[in-house]
Image (tube, rainbow, N blue to C red; front, side, top):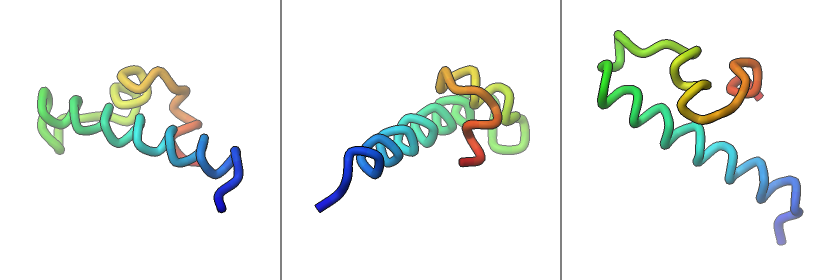
Length: 50
């Protein structure tokens, strides 16, 4: 059974991946930046690394 923290972490991971997909679709993989992905996901840039 997963804990609340694990479920939240997985939800954030999905949100970040979905945001990255949207940015990649618009800008291409090489044109995307971590700042743009963070902004799209509504997370801080630092949060993307955790």
